[in-house]
Length: 480
Image 1: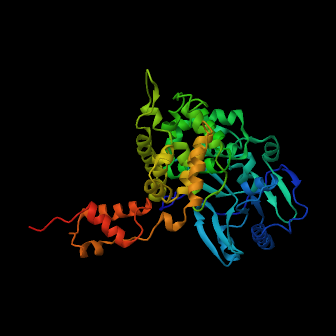
Image 2: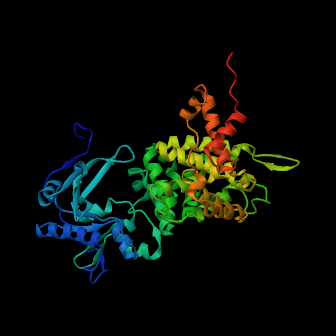
Image 3: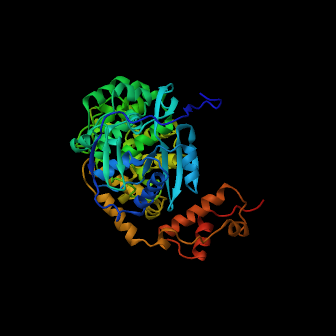
C-alpha cells in the first residue's frame, strides 16, 4: 500500500498470454452502422491499436450486444498504461489511476479505459491491496461473472471468450469466474450483483454460486450502505423486480439488508380485500407490475419502486386479530416512519427519502376520495408528484383485489379540473387582513386557508365574497 492507503501498481513489461487459445465467435460482420456511442468507443480502441497496444470492449456491453440489447455504456481494456492512455487522448480524467483506470472523453461520451490488471489480497471485502499490470486473460479472470468476462474486437466483431461466458449466456446462467467463495470474498457486493443480473436478465443462478451466497450472506453487512442501496435499486428498476426480491430472500441477503421487508412473510391479511394472500405475496405482486427502466422523470422511477416495496411494512408490527377479523391499526403511519428509518440507514437523499415516505404515508387515502369534500379532494390531487401517488395506488389495487374504481375516479377528476380550478388565484393576502384590522399572527394562516377552501368548494369567487366570509366567520373583536 502507498502513503495514501491505495494499492500499488507494479511497473514493468506486460506478461505473455497464457498458452491457451480462448473460445471465439464472430458477432458482427458489419459494425459500421451502429450507434454513435458504439462508434465513439470503437474509435478509442482503434487509436490504442494504432499506437501498438491491445484493446477490446469488455464486460456488460459485450454481454448486452450478444443478447441483442443496446448497451448504455462501453468499457474498454487495454495493454496501455494509464500514462500512455493520457498521452494518446486529448481529454482524460484520472478517476482510478491506482487501479489502472482512466476516463476518456470522446465524441460527447465518456468511457472507462482500464489497463489489463491482476488483483489480490482483498482486505476490506471491496478493494484489492495489490494490483499489477497483467495479460488480457488474467484481467478477464479477476472479474465477477462469466457473462461479464467476454471481450469484443469492434473492428471485426469477434468475441473472445476465456471463461465460457457465451455458453452461460445461451443457457441463461449467472456463474462466477472460478471459485464463487473466492469471488464473493474479494468483493462482497458481488453477491447482490449476482441477484441483480439474474433478476434483470431473467437468468438462473448457478447452484455453486448461490450456495456460496448463502454461506457468505452475513458479509454483506461489511459493505457500505450506498453500494447496497444502489444494487437493490438496480434490481428493482431493471426489470423482473419480483424475482429479484424472491432471490434476495431465498439466499439470505434480504433478512440482513431489509429485515422489515423480510418480516412480511406470513403476515396474513383479510381475504375480502387481499385474496392474493399474505403481505409478502401482495408486495411481490406489486413489484411484478413495476415498469422497467426510467418510466418517470428524474429519480421518480426509483421512488415508485421503493415505495411499492415498503408501502406495507407497517403491517408486520401492527397486525392484530379479534372476533371481527384481522386488523392493521396504524400501519400506514407506522410504515411511513419505518420507511424513513430504512431510507436513512441506506443514505438516501433528503428529497428521495421525503418523497418515498410521503408515498408510503398517503397510499390509503385513495379509499376515501369519493367521500372527500371538493376542497379536500382538490388539495389531494394537486399535491406534488400526484402521478406517482396514483401509480402506486394502481399497483396496490392490481396486486390485490384489482378494483380500480377510485383510480379511475381520480383520473376523471384530473381531466375535469383545469389548473385554475385546482390552484385558484389567491383572493386574500396578509396585507389585506392587516388593512382590515386583523393583528398579524397564527390567525392569518387559518383565514387564508379557510378562504381558499371556500374557493375550492365553489362557495367564494370574488374578493368581495371573501371579505364577507371573513367578516362572518372571523369577526373582529371590538377594541376595549
